[in-house]
Amino acid sequence: MLTKKIATLSGFITIMMIAITGCYKTSTIVVNPGSSITQTMSFKTDIIPLFTSSCAKAGCHVAGAKNPDLTEANAYKALVDGSYIKANDPESSVLMLWLTGKKSPVMPMGAGPDEKINAKIYAWIKQGAKNN
Image 1 (tube, rainbow, N blue to C red):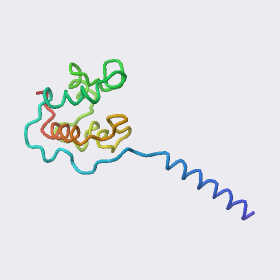
Image 2: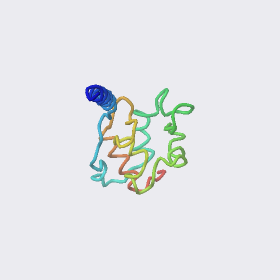
Image 3: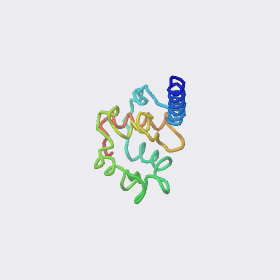
Image 4: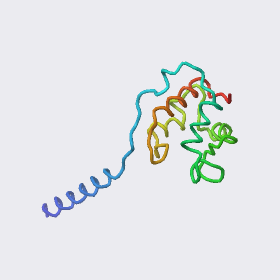
């Protein structure tokens, strides 16, 4: 009887170990990535190009695909209306949680956190997330 319980427990532990090792993130950034940026971030000239090159691609964050729509024409409204950003509070902004790996899936998808992207977006949100 004891042998059967040990075998069952061993099997359960083995299954749990396999399940746990299958759940992982690319990485998590703990340090505030944009805290050293002092120049004013512009949504149009600093943030939109990041979205265009890394996010607003076919099948990803474009009109009719995954939310939020990060195309130039729709990005700001989509971020604000969808509550993806909290002006002046990047640590609580869903967008930053995805970009830093604190929320899954880690973005950009397949690439994982990108310090340059994260620093600029963090600074932009910290500076008030203005549509400038």
